[in-house]
Image 1 (spheres, helix red, strand yellow):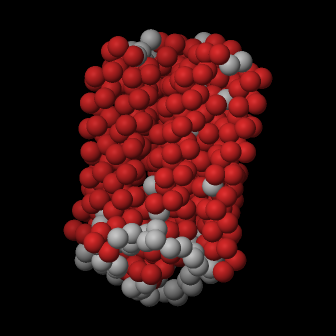
Image 2 (cartoon, helix red, strand yellow; image 1 turned 90 degrees about the vertical axis):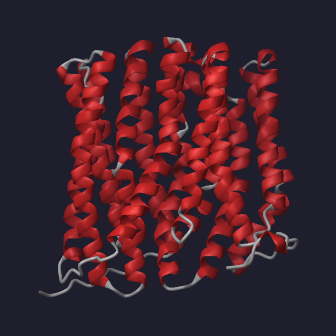
Length: 492
């Protein structure tokens, strides 16, 4: 059998831009789907729709998400070792495991949701279909990235997102209640298209992958880590069902939908950096891993801080545009979720740098500790504070989840992150506190003015860090002083 040559991979910048385009389409699909459903239904119905979507997402994290992470790591890792047959063997193993887990998990999620929320057979079918389709989509997307087929991913994402949105418009216009099926259809079509595109690359001799224990351990750790971190985000809607009113559950559904665009850039970086770092680890080039993690972390810290500050200040207006005036009272929930999201996204490069190598346990243990911390805060404050207590618990848990990988990568690679972390994260924290305290005296006009002022101040405060990033983009290397103390750990 003739072996198909691997196509040339796009560079990091081009790959990041292509990924950004695909993820913008994915995020906008969820955002516009949520906006259309929220305006076509009452808050109780939209809260239920958001909760069911959260259940399907959590279901996909139980096994398929770990399989997807393994595909992003081990396929390019074997390619970095110039072993195409082993890469094909890894692909076959992981796809089979993914399907074996997706079907029973989807059925369990559907029947569990039906029992808790008293769903009819049609809604139960919707939950199963969305969970299964999203699980398969997650695996196939990572396979595309593992084989370097980023342009193919972008084309598929754009096309299937457009079809999902068109189907949502049809459902809303016709007055049907099958709000989950448009998303399920889009993910299913993506899965079929990705399978067809990868077929030529999986032809040829396949080496029986002997390190199955290594893959199994990685999948298990990745599942635990993603379930504790991303699952906690989706689980806030389930916790809100217990601690908050029905109206506040809708606020959480809206907040989770609205913060999705905030993950565009870091997720685009992550799904490009992870295979790239795994390939570098396979080739023994740890210096390249350090360079990618350093520049990416600085960029996320500095570039996103003023933008998140603006979003925190105008949270009531964002919610009003999304679902109507009745959602504006959920501004405090959205602010807490935005602050937590900022911490989560700036940790993405550090997580990738550790997980693509031999330190995968650090992000996992941090996620477990973050989940425990968050649940403890929710248990203590959820009763007296309601939705705000749940949001505060998520913020505290995310701080632990993100802090572990960042501090570990900081020490392990002896990064010079004191200035960017202190200035950027401190600025976001000050804006969060100021917005929460002063909101009762502000109106839409004064909030807009405050947001513009915060943007100017943020750029001014971070101008030195922005200049460093500009020089790095031109010269290819950051020029910083005052690195981490040598006692923090050896350079690797």
